[in-house]
Length: 320
Image 1: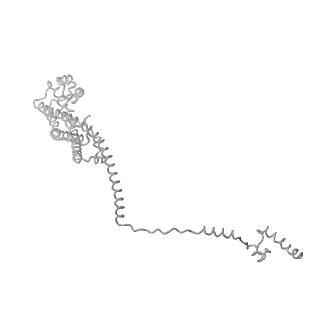
Image 2: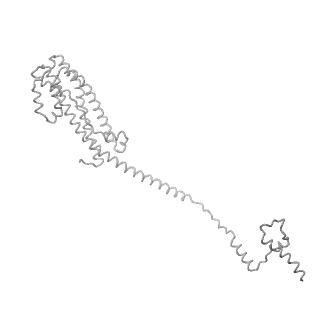
Image 3: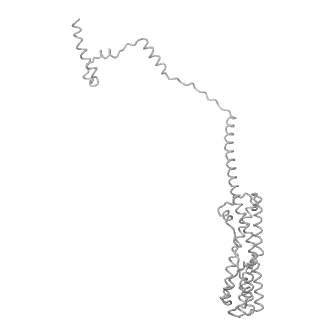
């Protein structure tokens, strides 16, 4: 027995270093025999430990979900889903249209207010333009008769007076800020009333025609001015610049005007042919003025009033 114990001691003493330094031992240098390795790995389990391991294995099993059976939809259900989707899109479209219509109506009303104010000023300007050109037209006729009777030193003051007024020019001061914005920016589309839109376009055409015709008159006034430079003296031309045709329309500077008309003003010439040429040049603008007086001014004024009434009715606006 002692020999067996002594014989086992070398084995135990050799096994301990192998356990402590197992990290540095390679398979070639290991002294553990297959029998010892098998004895080391085989660990007997008790019944309690075995039951616990089996229970853990059971809990780790993958549990499969039951298969869901897909039910086939009826065609009425598809139809209902389609109708609900269509109704949602349609109502969204209607709501957007209502919102856009409200915004456009608000903008249209703002433009309508501005246009209403501008047209009222235009009507007043057209009335003044008509009064001015009516006076000028009368002065043209008076000047022609005056020249026909003969110009002399005693009535030269009246000759200056008639010549100044017969060649007058009034440029209508249009209020077209809102109108130009509506047409140039395309905002006229905000007005849903097509009758109103048509009248606005017609009025814009009329106003442009009047502007063009007044520019033509302004150009034709240059010809009589060339004769006037050869007839009238600079001194008295300067005196007659103290009043304007507007003063006569407004009844201003009456005493000054009467004083100048009764003055014997010097002339550069007494040549009847030059007076006649001057009178003919003055009449060169009369057809244009007659067109303004008989056609364009009245038509434009009527058109402006019609637009004013339509705007007040369409957008429920009242006079300020």
